[in-house]
Length: 317
Image (cartoon, rainbow, N blue to C red; front, top):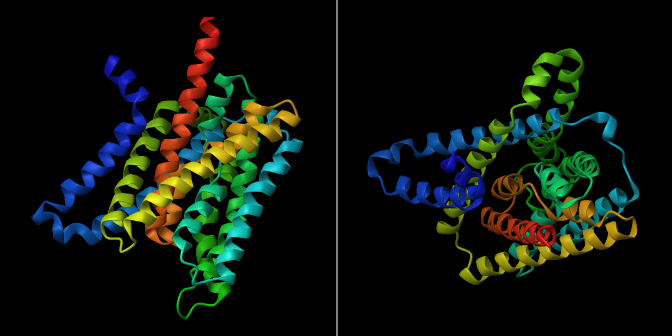
């Protein structure tokens, strides 16, 4: 029991450490070299499946009677979508921009949907888990729409038209973000017993997240090792992700405060599905940009830990 509690409390550093360790151990075992192409292919399949399953289990826990859009949802969607589009427009207008990698890193941190676990943290802090869950669904729709629209303009494939690129990226992003929600709704009405069993599988979702994060960090390390991007750009991505994290928590709370719901809005905008962001960066952007998402995972967990610490201190008083 103590071991399980320790793993739960330190899942983030354990998963990240294991991701780094697995990569360096694997590449330094010569007799595994022939299997590298197959391992990479397997990871390309397993990682999206894990994200899909995590979202499905999370959406199965939702009570749809509690889902109600509110005004701060609109403002937060405008911030995420607007900033993503503006930064994308900057890169389209100035394709040779020297800080392109940093801008792409910021785009990842801004368009990334809300983490499914944010509802739990929000509830502990005294916010509305239902409103955060509603926003999670809405921002998944937004990301599924904007990413296929913008990414082909930033990284066009040779010989591919915009329509082909849009369809290809939509085919990867849309099923991962929206199909779990649609499937959860169908299971609720068509297979209520299976839906109830999935809704009760809390631990499975937790362990899936840990494995997905470990794989994501391993891929991030691979991109760093093989990257030709200067180390200062990599440090810059860490700084950019930190600034994006602080800004999103800050503006989320400020906007939410106008509607008497600063905790929920702050978590909805600040706490991200970083496993998806790492996959997105590695798959569609310059792979090294996934560093920004990896660091964002650290920053938003530090913010959450600090908020929970302050809550615990207030409770003790």
